[in-house]
Amino acid sequence: MKKATYLFLFFLITSNVIFSQSIDDSFSQKKMIKDLKIFKNIRLKANSGLYKYRTEKEIDSIYNWAKEEIKKSSTYREFYNIICQLTDFEGSLHNETYLPENMSESLKNEKEGYFPLPIKWINRKWIINYSKGAIPLGAEIISINNDKIDSIILNLYKYYTTDGVNTTGKRIGLEVYFSKYYRLNFGKINQFIVEYKTRNSDETKKIILNSIANKEYYKNVRNRYSKPFDEVNYTDWQENEIYNYKHIDKETGVLTLNSFSMGNEKDPMHLKYVSFLDSIFISIKERNIKNLIVDVRYNGGGDDPNDIVTYSYLTNRNFSENKKAWISYYKIPYLKYIDTKVPSILRPFGVGKYNRLFQKVFPKEENGRFYQNSKSSDHKVRTPNKNTFNGNIYLLISPGVASAGSLFAAMVAGNKNTIVIGEETMGGYYGHNGHRGLDYILPKSKFGISFSVVNLEQDVPKKANQIYNRGIIPDYNVIQNFDDYLNQKDTQMNFTIDLIKKNMMK
Image 1 (cartoon, rainbow, N blue to C red):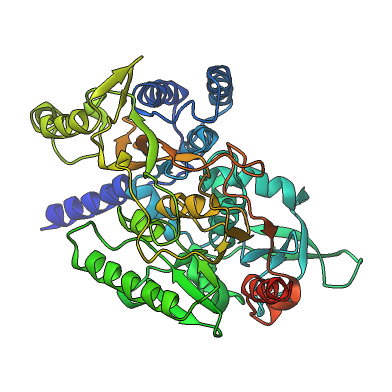
Image 2 (cartoon, rainbow, N blue to C red):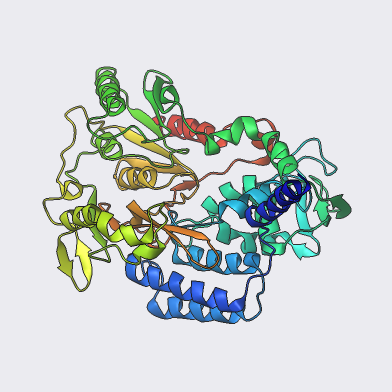
């Protein structure tokens, strides 16, 4: 009886050791080097976006940096930071590096080590976004533990990927995950010396904050001051919230598109959406609406062809979804590292249908790249809808616009009758890597990596103010000011309505 009890206790203890692993545990440099080599080989073979924004010389240089960093590293956390830096450097918002479940759960259950207060980017400053803490709401952060806040933010950008060298989109991640990112980058810290300034004061104050538990930090995030206004950046939209239309006055309407996640051509949600578009654009034409505000600020993407169908109501040109689309392999490489529950020995037998699908969609080979051909639906030439809008379009964008959302926004931004208002999107204007993704597990660290494999060149015109390795640049850069932050007001919408009134008076 005692023997059984001891065996049970031994199993319980060893199970906790096995299944509850800290990211701060030691990890040998030999294993890091092996995982780094596999990581690089996977990117070279499978990731068509590896050289989208970076030259071969730049990619070689950062891998040389990674090898040198490994020589100074000894933990999973340090190696994770190296892989995150490599992942972010490529410049694709669909890139991701994720921890194994046991490490992720261990982080969630940590009782200390987390910065206690949510922060927010307002008036080009990082401020305290919490009204019940030891630092006043809206106070500007100068430094934490003697590191300038700008330097800290630069170190944390690697955890939230965006297209090209865009940084506005990274702020969305930092405003919720700042404390987690700080812990990942700097380790578990028990106290934080914070320098700050209160509003309308040049006096720098200093305070020591004790760290809190992971779960306590996210409780504070859920109670952040700006939540009623900015929760839309993190919402899983319900079907009745995805889109709507309303008239502001007899000459102006607002079409809000929060997502394109409505299924494909046969999905009932898609068919319902198409019916909605038909009805509202007929109404717009009948009412002789002259100004249409198209609000996509919280649209993180979704399904084809919802973005393209919508654009057909907002253009007078023939268009296609993409000018070019290609992948970098004929057969899915490195099957033994694919993230799947299928045993390695059986994977070659089950991957055939996926390879045939890729080969059918990307049949044309040129210089080691596999392109879609003219028969692809992505290259189908589409025509404007008969009820297309011919008036003035005011496109509202934000750092939250990504993937299919940014593809749509880029096409609308390319129209001659469009004025773009808001902040630079995290999704690119000229293209992105999207559509289909691959997930791998690095064998030694068990870190997960994922990326989209289709390199897309979007069907948009060249514009002087649009930069190749950036998001969509607005014609009017409008950010929420401090007073509107305090009063939960929509600076961008109010600016747009005022601009329409001014333009109508000309």
